[in-house]
Amino acid sequence: MNPYTRTFHLQQHTPIIHFQYKDEGATLRATELKPKLDQFIYQHADNIPPGWKVGRGKGEHPALNYKVKIRLTGKYLYEVIKQQGDKDIPTFFANMGDKYNYNKKALVETDKPLVVEFTSIQTDLLDEVEKHFPAFIAQTNFGTRQNKGFGSFGLWSEKTQSVIDPGEDLNGAMHLSPTRVRDFHDILTIINYYHQRLKSGINYRDHYHKSFLFIYINDQHSTPYSWEKRWIKEHFISRRIAPNKKEERFARGLLGLPGSFLYNPPSRHAKKEYPPYPEKNVPIEISDPQEKVSRIKSPVTYKPVRIGNSWKIYLIPY
Image 1 (cartoon, rainbow, N blue to C red):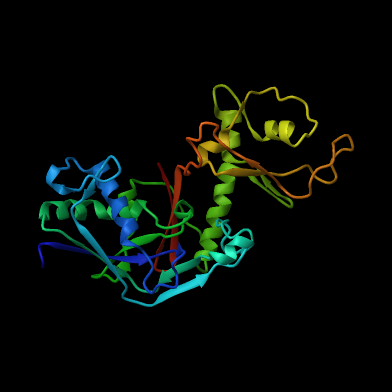
Image 2 (cartoon, rainbow, N blue to C red):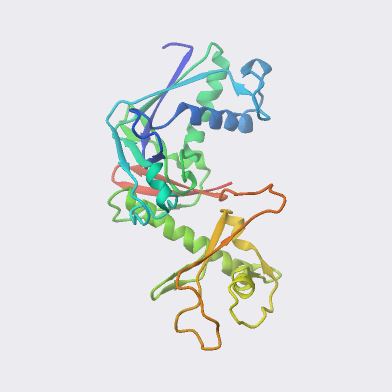
């Protein structure tokens, strides 16, 4: 065995959303993996000797002195994402509008394990990489919309020819065990449904559930609050409703802050004293006057893992 090399195999569970899908081999990129792994090692290593660092870098932590090479062992596959309303990928929204036709993205995957090779003349640094890489892969997805389950990979054992369950590296993180799953499309649908239950609630035809977040701030907190939805409708959509007796909080931002939120207008069968409303959802842009905050990533990452014919979806809090 070469002492200056460490090699891992990764099985892809869900596609990466990629804009360079026409480039052969544009799956998992070393340029994305290495900075994330560097940061992970900084966070979890007991000590980072100065000799491990290379260059000054732009951030707080300089890059670590090792190289990464990723190569395919199987077929390179991609499927261009349709414009607007592709129901197979409910958690992807960047395909809205005509501009998408000029900058399309694709679901990219490979049918056999990737080989990830680390090289460095500093064997003690490679030992640290080898120590932390399994937990890093267990907790990390890649590419666009990675916290919603895209770009999930798992360690592959060449000895047993199977995926290694990341449960031990996730410290008992909560997981869902869905049944009757056909492929990753079903997994992404389950993630989308569960995240709506967690954050915004479900209101579809006769299927209605309040969000877990709403229930928490109303019933579980020592001082019950209401969230911002009623306040937004009262002040921006001009719905004539009685003032809220509870103090409002912008609670949904706690589970991720996008550039805007959508609010449902009242039903067309609403009371006559209500003013007219648009038929479609009303977008409300969220902005910071000081321009310090534009988006905040959700503190929950969904990590789908396929082991044989069974799936698990781990919920990883940060």
